[in-house]
Length: 365
Image (cartoon, rainbow, N blue to C red; front, side):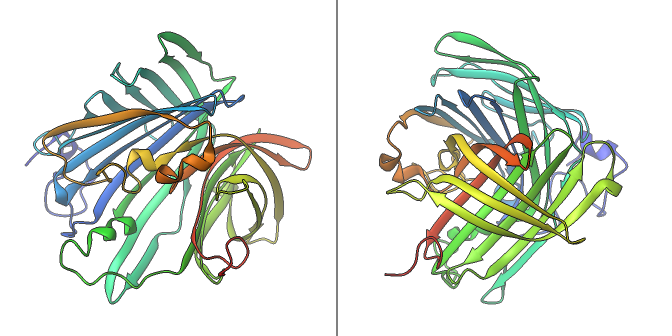
């Protein structure tokens, strides 16, 4: 089936853009974007994704207010025949200028929050090393991703009041991934497949920190022994293109947890570059959002890519004032953080989680 994308000179296979070359159910293309003010009063997050072989497009709009109340909206629709419009229910996403400016919007809805946000890049996009993994001989991950830092402008409405989103006060971050996404293999048992070999423990740290003229982005996964399963990252300057990017080869970390939870209380992270450069960054969370409510992990019967019907939406408002009461939605917390590297100050986000055992942060009993 032809779409507006087929007008472009970017085909890579002798077929049309309404499907992908991979036939697996776990193929997915996904964008995630967020924006926040310096104070941590507001933190908003959206995803827009297509599970092409499931014939599903879904999206979410989450808003944390003062770290105490989270407004959630999830939506899903049938993908075909409208394959060339990124709109799901009241949520929409539009590319204004490739790799520089995008907008995402949430129309008014029953959860009481709406917005229109424009992202303007502050740094060139940072391309991750493709991630690939097999388990029991089956490909469980084969994905490419890039991330980018920027500023936000527009407006936000909540509790009947409109707030300006100003680029001198608001930061924004986004990523774009495509390929076989490993989390979706949680569907394997229901489909009659042997489940993957279980991990006794897992630490995940994906972060973007931006300073006045440079940014760092990295992704780290460790197993229950603290061994690195996967790492990719880079340092980039705002002044130029790829010549100003330095790849990272690893990181050292000291995470501090909120007592009684596995939520982040603070951290010291040292980024180690291939040229031997080491940058030690202190971070302090100022607010968070519970990303599990968007479907990155199962929540209330929904998960990214799950068929929910031709048009579906759901949502709720969560009282998040007591973090120890948020265990049902705490599998994928994402934090806004203040950053300090020497005498330089910045802001950023970190998706951080510890599941099961970890020798440093959750040793076996």
